[in-house]
Length: 303
Ligand code: PAF
Image (cartoon, rainbow, N blue to C red; front, top):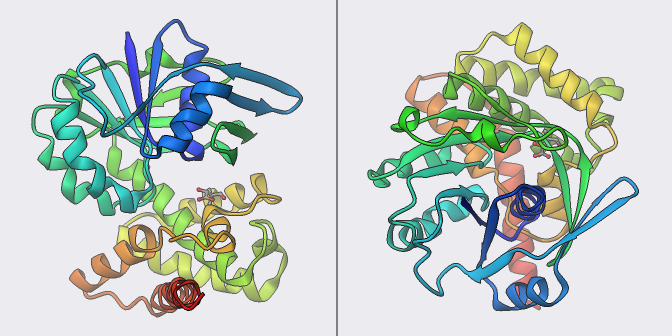
């Protein structure tokens, strides 16, 4: 079987490296020729603790050709890039039956119905991953990939077949419960750590920041219609388990990259408006992060 992965970021490279250990062929589709060449010449290196593994996936340019030979596809681009890769998926993967999307937030869901001819799955990635270079990745935390069927998702591929002890896949029945649980966690940890420039664990240790976490969390639970006691317990345990990690949003800000704030708190603001729910704390963190992105952009434009 041929497994395709779209995305040369941390998560795309992590999937490519682990799936390359399986008996399946893995094709990695990237957008930049420079990254394609780096992986083709040097291989893709995965670092986990003291172990180092290098594989040689078939690496292609996403827009370069028809990828009709791919049986199943994992789309691992950032949420704000999904719209941009949709035409490529429609045109170049027309014979690929099952497609898994592993983005943060829920903003991308509105465009997925365009892929009518495919079985669509949604995934939540709970691994920690850090991209060291275009051809090297560090697996910073062993987690799992949760997968739930979305559109026509019951008739496609059994993703659990790809599960391995060191890279597990588990099935969930309810995509909404799965995504909203993760969205709640991201809506609290990501903007607060990015604004305060602290590791995840610091939010729990400081009573003032802990209070802010509670406020953002309560609003998110109300909008997502999830039980806040359970959601809060999950949030605290993610914060504890990743206490020394930097959130993806903090890393984006530190590296002057666009963040996923629109897909996360931006999605919550829209949903809150539709339900007439007041969310002042989410509104505040959203405005601060958007302002930071804007500030970075104008600094770059002014040299
Ligand atoms: O986006 C992230 O950084 C992660 O999803 C999480 C769970 C917040 C841990 O850092």
